[in-house]
Amino acid sequence: MLPLKITVFNRQINIMKTKEQILTKGLRENLKELMQKEIQNFPKHLETLEPKERLNIICKLLPYVLPKVESVSLTEGEPFSLDW
Image: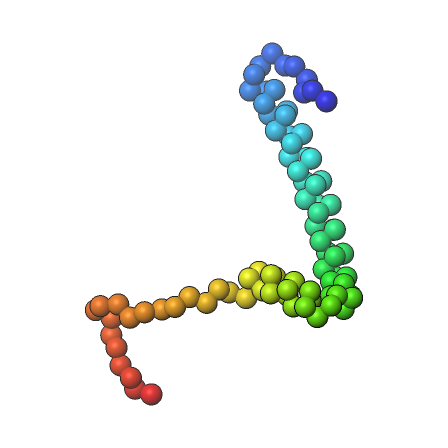
């Protein structure tokens, strides 16, 4: 559908923006519901996979669950002590 033509240009933009926001909100809600259902079924789906495939999927999902480990080094001027 084309937006209604209104003589005031700014008004026309606002109408199109509102329609886009409504479509985006509906799409987000549908995607959210879909993901919630899939997350609930995820353990069942994992059980049906071969161990190699299961491990591959789990490894691919790890970055979304666990923080990435980064090395930390001592810089000049920082206090340093080994009082263990």
